[in-house]
Structures are given as structure tokens and as C-alpha cells.
Image (cartoon, rainbow, N blue to C red; front, side):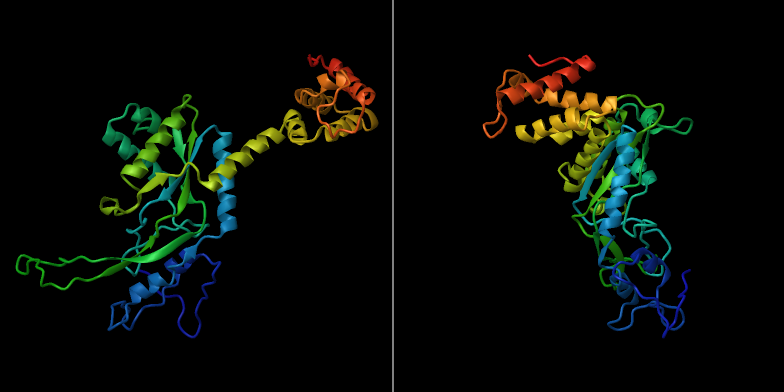
Length: 355
């Protein structure tokens, strides 16, 4: 059983940017005389303690950094990442020991509610077996073999608002001699929940035995499980139901960012990105700089630059002495000179000249 670590006048301080999970689990100070937490009059020590963490939890910067690392891992392994948003209250970890009778599962470093990968896999398997879909054993494993995919912990994409909820067992502690009845006094039991509206990121990674499309198949199973069955505790009464959030702005930005990293990882990608959206005048200046005054000496960079210029389609016009933008200041003779610079460099690498 938990014991208080501090007594007045020395008390730990809960800062706004602190780990409320550590506070919730370690620093309970609501004990009364005789080590009890029974309600007295208008005072409810258990509810008071739950309300001490009923705020927004999770630092935006830490959550964004974690989601970025997780998304990069999933993408690098050819997996599937999906964002889901809570349609109802969410609670997990009720069975954990705690003085308020109902515990709560906190992410150890982020200080937010989360779903361990084992739980994500378990609810996915439960849904798949209930629906009787094919290849559950091959994809998710069985007692003798490992599955084809692995599940990462599902973590929030942004801070989560926590609030107090209450469970009221109307017919507790009854016996044959004292049967349940409406005349008995219920005993409200408060517990901590995550309010609806928060989003979490789920990741599915293919393993060595996976086939093409396995991660995508399991992703659809997971989405169906979260939408139809729910996650965490008390799903039978409507808690823990999520829906896919395909347009989640954080996930959209991560996909764009990851794609840009891939583009910028190659010389071709970098030069295409640098020339994209540039005016004809700016591209001509780049040709003069990189192919004449400060020539690119790295063959890979030089070839990538020339290919990017050819892909603009402007060189064919320059070859005829024509400009593609009326605001370009160079005349026909100068344009032909720039075209020759590009075409000579293209010939070095056997690149197809424009028609």
C-alpha cells in the first residue's frame, strides 16, 4: 500500500510543467488519522487527490519530439502510422494499486495517458478473432510463432486534458441475509479519466517475416477495433472509443516533413527543391554561378543540378534565344549562351537534351 513520503510543513511542489503521473502515484497527501481516506462531511480525500491532477498534461515540445521519432522509425521500416481521436472518455490502468481504489496508467517519461504496444496488439487480436478474419495467427502470432508485425506504444500527439469521473456501485457488499435493494446507500468511487477529443499516434512495424501489405492490413484491423470495440477500461459502457483522424494536422505535417527529408537526402532532390518555384531570371543566375563562375566540382552535384535545370523545360527555349518569362532581362544571345552551358554539361553525363 502507498504511504505518504512527506508530512507538513515539507510538501513536494507540483509544477505546471511537472510529471503529474509521478505526483499522482507517489505523493498522495490525503491520508487521515489512522491511515484512512474515508470521506468526512463535505470532504472527499479521494476526489480531492484526483482533482489535483485534473488538468492538461504533457508538454507540447516533448510530445512533438516523441511523435516525430516514432513516425520516422515507422516510415524507415516501411510500416504504417495512424492517428486516432477519442470520441469518448478514456481510462486505462484502473487495476493498478492506488489509495483512491482505481489507478491510472501513465507514460513513464511523457507523463500522459497512453496505450502500451502489448495492449494495442491485444485489442487488435480480440477484434480480428471476433470478426473471424483470415491469417490472424500469421500476422499477429500465436503460442509457437511470432507475428509478422510489431506494435509500438500509442502516445498522444498533443497535451491531454484529464478530469474526474465517478463510479457508483448501488448494490455493493450485499449478502443473502441483506439482499440488494434501492433503499441501500450507494458509495461513489471517483477515478481519473482523459476527456474526449485528444489524439494519439499508433505505429505498426513489419518484421522479417512480413509480406507486402501486411502492415496496412493490420492497420485496418486496429482502426476497426478502436472504432467498434474501444481501448482501455470500461469499453462496454462506452469508454475508450476512437475514430481514425486521417486529416490530423500533426500527422500530415510529419508525413510532409518525412517526405522532404527523403527529397533532401539526394543531390537530385535538393536541386529540384532549390529550383522549384524560382523565376527564370533566378534560374539563369544559378546556371551562371554553378556552371561558369563557381563551377560545381562534385560530379554528383553537377549532374543533379544540370538534370534539375533540364527538367524545368526552359533550356529548349533558351536554345532558340527565347525567354519563357517576359520579365527576364536577358536577350536572345545571352539566353543561347546559357543554353550552351547547360547542354555542354549535360553531354558530360550523357543526359538527354531538350527537344
